[in-house]
Image 1 (cartoon, helix red, strand yellow):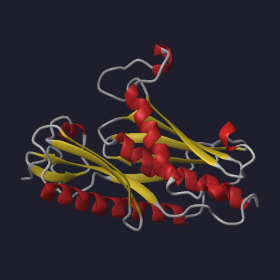
Image 2 (spheres, one colour; image 1 turned 135 degrees about the horizontal axis):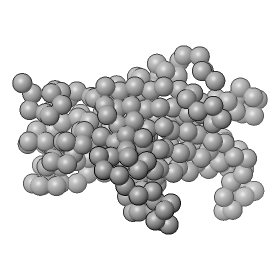
Image 3 (cartoon, helix red, strand yellow; image 1 turned 135 degrees about the vertical axis):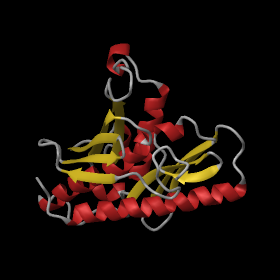
Image 4 (cartoon, rainbow, N blue to C red; image 1 turned 180 degrees about the vertical axis):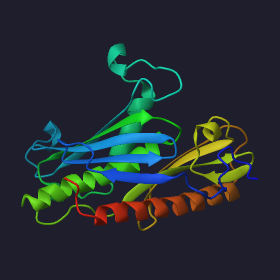
Length: 244
């Protein structure tokens, strides 16, 4: 019997899936499921850019992230009701924006803003990483719509991007932690990578004992393995005809 609460092997992803075109009005959308985590990701195109980019013939990408009140085991207040976003929300949406901007040639987007929204409807760990993997698919479809409508001649997407969490649980490096593991782990790390294996961002923290160099290498290798599997799913769903 495995030592993980989910009964998965140390190097095993949770069941991962992507469904495209789930929102009728959005230029691009996807539902991403990673185990018990479910997130709706949408991509909207606006024919304008922030003031600091006006007249530079360059595009922009920005992201927003939020959790529904009953996405967790107890109800949380809506951030709109509190009048401000908390620090975690701001950190995550900035991470999503950085990850996707690294995947897209903004100079080739023209003076447009690609606005990403990631709404967590159910949380069971790994929401930020799942959001990145799903948001890429939504962004891809939104860009493809520009191409189909003759507004772009070539895609500004440089490479596929995905993300996954890894950590040390019961002293052993593991892939794709759910909440039960994340809340009791010795260390956790979020890794964002390109299809070619280049790192976009690594966020890691030792919750208990410090992370040893050998463990760090094991965690990064696990992350790359998981991300390649996720990117294979992205390729598979994007190879199918657009549902919208």
